[in-house]
Length: 133
Image (cartoon, rainbow, N blue to C red; front, side, top):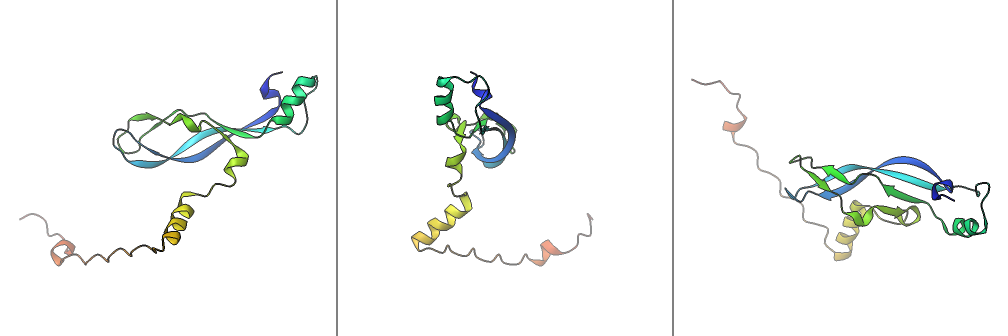
């Protein structure tokens, strides 16, 4: 029996953070995924082998996009392939990047230095232009 008979599919878009190999800039990209959710019961005509296979199945995400276009330089680059399939139950416990950064700063005892206040611009840069003379 085909594997798709055991799952219902739903398209999904998730953000991904990737670095362009050309310009070395990191950006957020919208990546298309297909969410496959295990059906609540076996399809009709399933044999004993299919029952054993169905018992081991779990929900997962399958990445549809293989390439993205860099927002800075416009070059297409390939998304690293080690994350083309992800199980949904593994995603639930992962922290997001912002929470992880905050936790690292708290653990190191470093609250992070406040960025120094920028001095005000000199008057010659803030005056209204009178045009060329």
